[in-house]
Length: 105
Image (cartoon, rainbow, N blue to C red; front, side, top):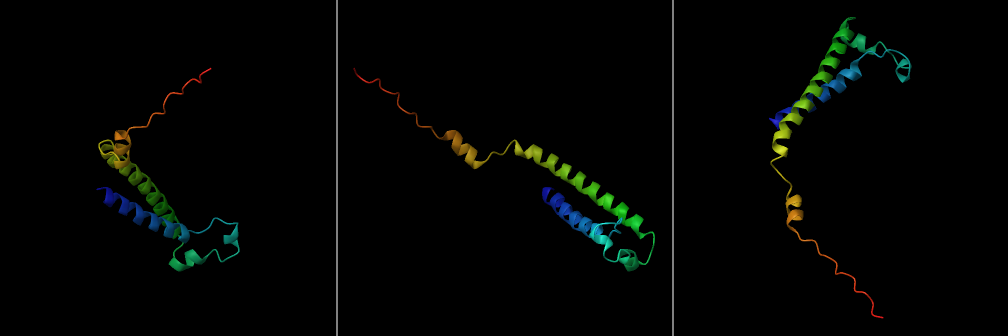
C-alpha cells in the first residue's frame, strides 16, 4: 500500500511539473520577454488555460491527500518496529568513571 501511494505521488508530481510549465504566464518577469502565446498556440484553443489551471489545482490537492495518507499508513507500523541501533544502545552498559580520591595531607 505504501509503495502504491509513493508511486502515485511521484507520477502526480511529474504531471504537476508539466502542467505548471504549460500554463500561460500572467505577465511580467522573464516570461514577458519570450512569446507568451506559445502555450495557447500549441493547443489551439483559448479555453485550455482554464482546464490546465483546474488540473494543476487537482494534482496539487491529490498530492497533499496522498502525502497525508502515507503518514497514516506509517503511523501504525512505526510504533511496533524499532531500529537495530536503538536496541543495541539500550543493551550496552555505560562505563562509570571511578570516584575521585581525596589527596592525602
